[in-house]
Image (cartoon, rainbow, N blue to C red; front, side, top):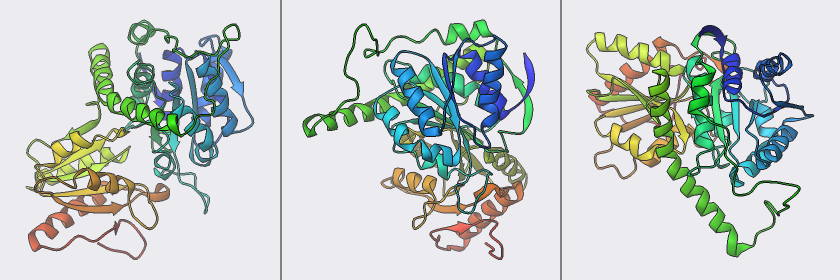
Length: 394
């Protein structure tokens, strides 16, 4: 079925197709439409699920944690300050190894107040023990949320998953979407299997209680190993989904025209589409850049990224986020991954698109041309280059 859907409604349809059993709902711009649409599905009888209207985002995650620990397939959505407000419970869900799926509509944090897209909110959660996906378009939002349940519930993983979509660029923009048939998704994603630890009033147990120094490190060790195993599972699930629907997303990384590229542009989220268009135009001018879209930020695809970057002379890393006092978060993670690479390429960090500011095709073309010029002239890189700041030029 082909339907015109916003990114928010694509997320809701994905939860519907995944047959979620518990939804915790608290509104915040720009994700409110996700839980509103799920409320419609439940009211119409299309989705048999418990809809819990809570008083805050902190309570939303607390409710989902209880439902997941009791064996239900659970879903919620949030953004920006809502995500930060639920931070305590986000850690609780990650360290408790609960297979929750949450849509995060990536939005800037205040002050000043801003409701437009930025990745700082979701990247601030990178150490919580959640798998993190970033989507390029609305079709990928729908497909990735369905895949996320399959990954989260795999016995080799058992970790919660955030699926990030950019505020307004995806959340409120409508595009044609291929919606799979329910029977196909039922075959791909069967009912959730019980965990080894299930909250059951007839068989009570102690769950997530106090541990001492002789036990806590072992829990973190198991969490890390689950993240490492998740890489393989994400690739397998993406391949299986591709066989079912004809759509797959290259697992952890999406590489565009990288086979013969001598310069790489590394991006996350919706701006990848503009980067790819810019690369096509630059190819017509005789340049040979390629785009590497990081689809999965946690677990970070270190080895896969290293392999791709071996052939690049230089890399432009575009961060739609900022870690004040350091720079871009994606830049830092990438640079760490390439640290001991034999002949490491030149790596330049660009901060762009904060607070919803456009990152245009022209911006990407300017970045690539500037980096090529730096290579030719032997110009040293600087810690951060800012794109689109008033009065600041390359």
